[in-house]
Length: 297
Length: 258
Image 1 (cartoon, rainbow over the protein chains, first blue to last red):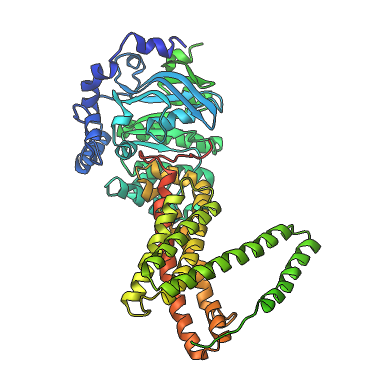
Image 2 (cartoon, rainbow over the protein chains, first blue to last red):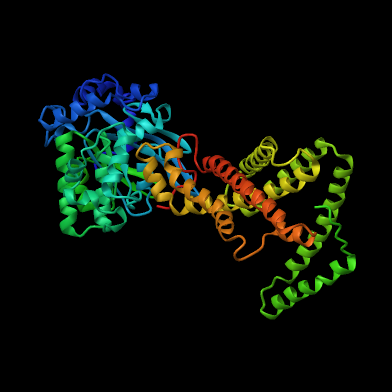
């Protein structure tokens, strides 16, 4: 991998601010998206505006996210997340020590062996946990300044272990949508997640692990997030189902303009899904950069 | 209810024969409860004798202030006892104190306001003791269940938080289940009362020579009053205690293992 994470941020102290106008245009016109979160409303933009944006993106109106832009990813892309010297201990064990990394808009994979701290990093990004030391920035703002619940609706995390609520798949989808103040089109989000409409009335505890993972994804999509955080999204799937989910992810993120951060231990998956790669080993980000460089050697 | 019941110390001593059976069973089957049984008998002797003198003093004095002091002491003692049973709940003492105090105060205030009992020590002390004792058990059971469920269902709770739910929303299913488990014992025993067992109050009144119908009426009042106080106790304890498992930023303090 061509550059270390530390040097990437060292020569550019305010990358997020520099690129925000571009990012804001790409996202539908918010001049400074993070500003809405601190003010405390449920959403960056109102429900109607978001629904409009989704339609608009699906119609191909999003010029900020062209396909195949590997050449742009390194420095011209606005920074979505930044981790600055992040330390975290858990139950007396050091999980993260001194993680520095920048994650741009688009498709990022966090790769590394199991136990290296990848999932913990993901949980920091939507504030399911806070670092003991250091800072996590979302679009240039410390996540601790933001309303955590609004942040989580905008930055949706799909955990590795499927953990649906009791009831049907539709119940789960509708609950998630109601939390976000959205009206859910259950069939549509199921389809986006690779499940057909017949799953709506299935009991959540009668699904296979792979189906649950996709139901979790559908539930997250019902909130119309801007960023999807996915923890080992295909770990329970056979290769056929895995390919289907990967295709669905690429398709829906491309169509809807959702940024995604995928945690995976699978180098092959990172090659297929990532435009930007953060490599984590033993609680540190040992490298990050464009996928083309990460997998060049 | 004025029948005098003469119970001699010799009769009390004779009942220790049944304690001897309990100890013998424990030793015979290796249950290892001999010491506990001994401690239980000794403590019950000391505590009940002390309580007897305290109640006698309060009855003789007739002062409501003393009644409240005694009930407050029961609330504090009950909260500490319940905390020992609900060890897995961090900072459980505050919720338990609130739960027992509210259950006791609301129940006694209501039974007096509704004209069920006169505001006199001879009613308030025993009823208060029963109310707080049952409220303590219900709160302890509910909090134990709460701690177990929050640990077992941590993945679901965190996944719900990840959708932007508040701690209250994410914990609602487990709070509901723990409230239920705190109340269900009394609800079930109320259902079967009179069929399978004769409750303690009735036993006391019948032994003391009261008319059975009168004993029944008092027993019904107490059972129904207890249902209300147990509900208050369990809902206050769980409603305050679940928060201890979350940070102010709606994060689980003890997240699921990765």
